[in-house]
Length: 175
Image (cartoon, rainbow, N blue to C red; front, side, top):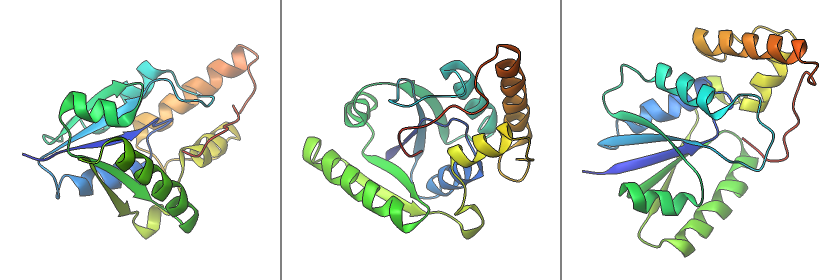
């Protein structure tokens, strides 16, 4: 059995993520969609919310398991006995980042493979940052995320407004 890890912050999960995960189910026996708990960036959604949204998204997918992790991705792969890391590529600038990350992971764990899937063209513009920005500015993200994610974003934006938090938390890293 080949188990693949698809790690990301999923803040929030969007149709591009979903596309990559579902396509990965055609290549591997099991996909562990792992929500990174402690990224070095500002998050809009809590870990619990992100996990709940990802679980709801894949609730009917038998080959997908949703978990959380922190620390090095390669260490988590060893922990769950994953042989492959799945990543998505949207645009050319993603390639350089993912290439460097794959080389670093290979240095740390030569037994792990990284498989990068090219996003479907209809999702090539999507990033979690784009989704958060559009939603926080009142735009309709219904074509970018599932309905339950759209609602969660609206709820969080309303909560942020009620608490006097800034409309859009800045990110230091790519999604």
